[in-house]
Length: 292
Image (cartoon, rainbow, N blue to C red; front, side):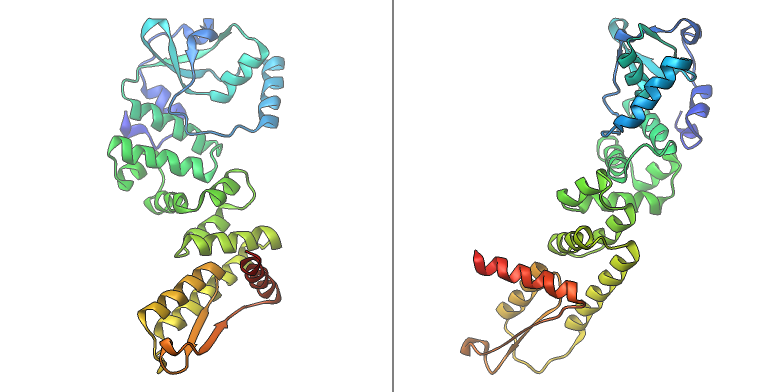
């Protein structure tokens, strides 16, 4: 079955052995169908589901759902979760369905992923979590996932990088508060503190993707200056750690300049900012530290 997996749900259905052809005509008792436990989609748009419910009420189900047979006369949903949910809301007793011959759980997950990805129903985090499940649970490589899902390897890799984002940012992406491109820029940063700092700036100042890209670029250049600049100042390992900690906390370039030996306790702390808004952000962070 895996040879067909990049070609779309209809190709998969046509390639499958349909074990009960009359199921399309007569339908299956809806109470015998259980949801797909490997369903990658976690968030369902309520308004969209309401529209589908109204459409089914008026015109019926135009495309059967797909299920596989379980023991005890039950069936597991393979594809068509929204149609299944809408039918239950309406109170339908039976639902038209293709019964597919699927034995492996990984094939079930792949089909659910394909349907949702091709319909663009998954948010980027749900998509990435689906890929991760294929890799971790079924011992696939990114190359395997790429071939079987029908997406390029760079796309798979970029989606999975989003899973390194802090929970706050992943939740915002799921809820549509930031775009996929915003999230990809944040995922390219070195530390969680930097990601959170710039994420807060994006949401507070309503930064466009272009503005965010410019801001991230400035931050990276500032860090390169820190690492490449040869200074004659005396620096201990401890002062380097302090500098790194401050950079992460403030999400900007911070330079410590000691006069003489660091143990003498004299010097300067230089904090860079790149705009008036950036200054206000850092100012507020420093005030928070003072109040604590």
